[in-house]
Length: 242
Ligand SMILES: [Fe+2]
Image (cartoon, rainbow, N blue to C red; front, top):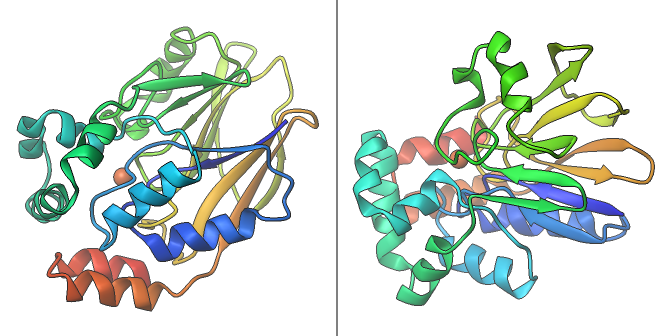
């Protein structure tokens, strides 16, 4: 079984389509989204439609939480709030209802999917939890591996012999051998915060016990221009191309 993990697409249809094209020929059985499909980007409606058309299940991100509980808009910084308020206006009521109904976590093929941190938080950032507390977090879910997004930064936490180690997650293959347990941050498809404009995603090959990290170039300048053309905050356009 090979599954693709995509997170933080953030209304960036160009990046999302590039990742789907990159997936062709990789022998993937299914793809999953770790949430934040909307917000920041210029094409949230198209992203939601494509996600549904391809039958890609998703968990609830903090941006989808705003579709469910509009009072959570107050938690966002002013630019993100403005972007999200416009996004929610553009989405059809039925699309908003679809996003609001997304689950807080999924347990599929023996792995757990959560937007922020396990067991099921869409709002807490991984970096908010000190390393010495992460060991306890591993006790909060039964799956050996949990995939997260939310920070838009790739990273790996490994629990082995009672100790948690943080490791970089560069491109290529990484073995996630038992009995170790792992927390994998797959980075962002559509709104990078790591200085690399490419779209990032992961493939988990359960049979080989190998995690693959992929980086996909796409026309980020076109996606940035669409953000400006639609009157969304310019800083979210700049982030795509710098
Ligand atoms: Fe996000």
